[in-house]
Length: 238
Ligand code: ADP
Ligand code: MG
Image 1 (spheres, helix red, strand yellow):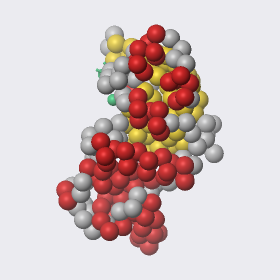
Image 2 (cartoon, helix red, strand yellow; image 1 turned 30 degrees about the horizontal axis):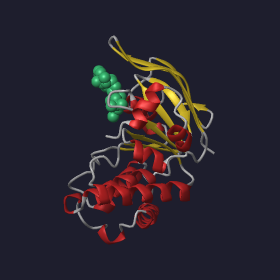
Image 3 (cartoon, helix red, strand yellow; image 1 turned 180 degrees about the vertical axis):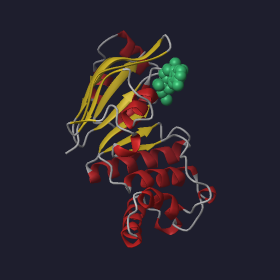
Image 4 (spheres, helix red, strand yellow; image 1 turned 120 degrees about the vertical axis):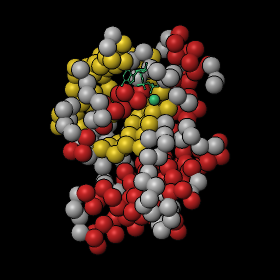
């Protein structure tokens, strides 16, 4: 079980309020998408959940435990970024293994776990290659594997598909959904792309200036926008 509860979260940078008293409940196994225009606070909220930023006020509960002030490495959360952030001098397998080494896991346990996630993201054949020799989609699968190998309670994906070309984006989109469902992994997915949000999510939160405009199923967002902002955002294909 790992549900995520965000309670009255608030954060400002100087005078700019970026997260404005947000409340979100994400049930176990749900893929929830944070959707909204550039600058609405999606990445900041994700970074606060991961512990890379700290909320000014409010609480984040994972599995009932208050993680609001825990250091990132103790949160049991994996995060994947738009630009992969792989170690260029390590092979694919070494990139994936790195976090397990830090945890001082025995090498045979590490090898078995790396093998398992390589299969999950279908990169067994690339284990010995360096990231530079991979395509964008493959690099992002390595980044995903590097997170999953830690067996996180929560997966955070910050625009993981935005740097990829259209065909690869669609393939990886369905691969992420399949893996997320197979592992029954609670996931927060960030995008500014409404089509992606509608195709991938169990639930969507539409953000505007750090506030929730609508929290509902993708179908409801599309068919019954709650207000003018939602209707305008969904109607305005980018
Ligand atoms: P999004 O991911 O939705 O595009 P962000 O969360 O990155 O939005 O940013 C929300 C707002 O907060 C933007 O106006 C951005 O410029 C500002 N911001 C983000 N991080 C910082 C920071 N470290 N210092 C100051 N302002 C920031
Ligand atoms: Mg962002």
